[in-house]
Amino acid sequence: MRLVLFDIDGTLLREGIAPKIAFARALRETYATAGPVGTFRFAGMTDPECVTEIMREAGVADDLILQRREECLRRYVAYLEEEMPNHDGAHLYPGVRELLERLNKLDDVLVGLLTGNVLRGAQMKLRRWNLEPYFRFGAFGDDHENRAVLASIALQKAHALSGREFIGSDTTVIGDTPKDIACARAIGARAVAVATGLVSRAELAAAVPDVLLDSFENHEAALRAIFP
Ligand SMILES: [Mg+2]
Image (cartoon, rainbow, N blue to C red):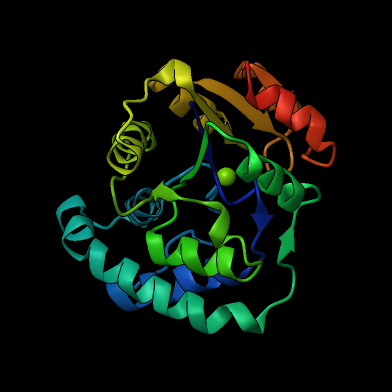
């Protein structure tokens, strides 16, 4: 059985400006500053990591950041729910639905999420496109702040769900940043990179994924990339 783990932002979809606005509101309300949120590069980072990094850059002390981080992320999801309907620019990438449809029809494949989004944020982003039913489980930003650790958590959750023990060589991790590739390597998994997000093709190639795709538009090619 093969375990296939997808990142969300930049890989399946683009959410537009709403998450950044929700983050700014949550940070300001929690820490009295939004720091450099406007120019911060969120790609590949977990939500808790984003809070920590942005507030460090704003000069907030580490113990205070940690102490209020959960509260900040709770506010973030509440504001995300409020902001999502107010902004255009959300986008489902070409071929994504067809690829997920195909994968879900295959025997011997378990499809899950491996994302830095906190659970509720992930659910909202997927629900907009009715993608939730394609994923049997997931590892999320509220499971751990470190993406590499999230990969091991995903293996454990896949085991708990299926009763089958997965190792890295049974697993494909799919994402749009060098951090997704590093996260695949952390568990010895196959790394498939897709250049639909904010990271350039050249930057992704430099991180040496097993396969680098321009998009999932050709879902035959995407399927071949996922299976070694
Ligand atoms: Mg991503």
